[in-house]
Length: 88
Image (cartoon, rainbow, N blue to C red; front, side, top):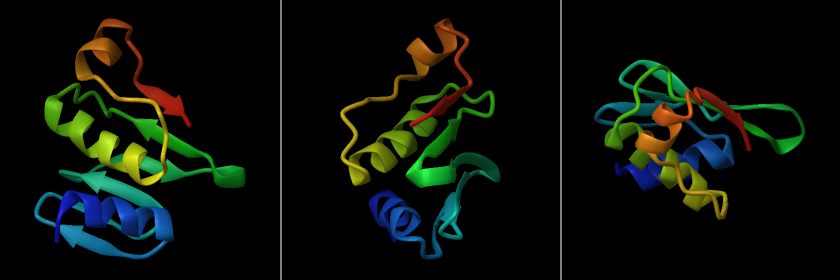
């Protein structure tokens, strides 16, 4: 299963696993760190968990693409702005 499939399963509220990522449909984990969680009224809480890497950004961007968000995640920008959590 690919990153995109796990991101789609997260959006659809279904469980899925792929190598280093997994979702139970409510939360999305990367290397055991919860980087996304569904909030109230359709919001999604994004958390870098201190890992400002291209890998984390890649997974967050797959989630963003699945939700059709125009926002693109950048590890460098998030790190430089000391932005660890965002609500989308």
